[in-house]
Amino acid sequence: MITLEGLTKTYGGTRAVDSLDLTVAPGRVTGFLGPNGAGKSTTMRMILGLDAPTAGVALVDGRPYADWPAPLSKVGALLDAKALHPRRTARNHLIAMAHSNGIPVSRVDAVLSTVGLDPVTRKRAGQFSLGMGQRLGIAGALLGDPEVLMFDEPVNGLDPDGVRWVRELMRSLAAEGRTVFVSSHLMSEMQLTADQLVVIGRGRLIADAPVAEVIAGSSRSTVAVRVPDRRHHAVLRERLTAEAERVDSVDDRLIVTGVPVERVGDLAHELGVRLHELHTDQASLEEAYMELTADSVEYGVAS
Image (cartoon, rainbow, N blue to C red; front, side, top):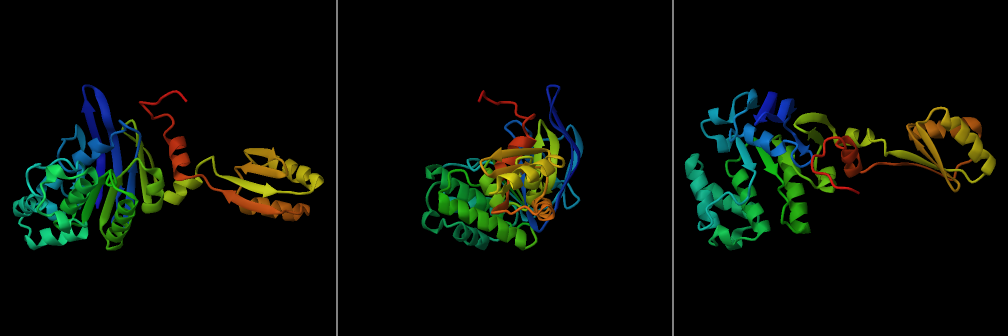
C-alpha cells in the first residue's frame, strides 16, 4: 500500500505537488493520470525518496521507502528505462541490482525470462531498442518480487503484442494482491488495464475513483432513443426536456444528456411511445479525462 499524507513539493515558490492525500490500495491496478506538468513524476520520485517533499509524507506500508532495509524487495519501480550503465549487459545490470539488495542471482534469469529477454541477456543495454529497454526496466522492477510496483509510462516503445503483454502483466500482479501504480498518457490502454484512477492537475487531486465511475460522470455520456412516429417523437421530447440537462433531435432520434437509460425507457412506456432503439452512448475514458482536466492543462495548443 502507498499512502500520501499532505504531500507537497515546491520549486522556486511554485507548488508542483499540492497537499496530496491519497491511498493506493493493493489488489488492483491504479492508473495515475494528469496533463504534462501535473506533478505525476514528482509524486513518484517522492514516494521513492528521490525527491524530498517540502511538506507531508509518502509512505510504503506505513514506512518511508528509504527505511526499508532491502527496498527492492518491498517496491519495484520503473521510472526511467535509460537509467542504467549502457556498457553493462542486461544480465550484469540486473546482477548488480540483485547484489545491492541481497537478492539471489537466480532471480535475474527468472525475470529476464518473464520479460522475454532470454535471447539478449549478454547484449549491452546501451544497444537495446526503446522497447527492449522498457522490458529490461520492468525486469528490474520485478527483481525483488516486491509487494508494491510503480511504473511510469511502461509501454513506451513497445509493439502491440508488447503492450498487451504489459497489460496482462499488470493485471496478473494486482490479482496476486500486490499494489500496482501506473502512470500513463495512453487513455485507451488505461481504460483496459486500470481498476482505479487517480487524476491530478497542477499538483492537485482532481479524481480518485473506479474507472467506470469516472466515465459515468462525464457529461459526454448520453442516451440515444429512436422514435419512428413523429407525434410520439414530439411527445417524448417534451417530457424529457422537463427532466434532462439537454435533449437534441437528429432525424428520428433523440440524444439525451442527464437522464439514465432506464428512466428514458420508463417514460416511453408511460407515454405509450413506440421505440425502435434505446441505448447508452458511453463516453470513452479519453473524453472523460479531457473533461476533468480541461482547466489543468498548462501546455495546451489552439484547436
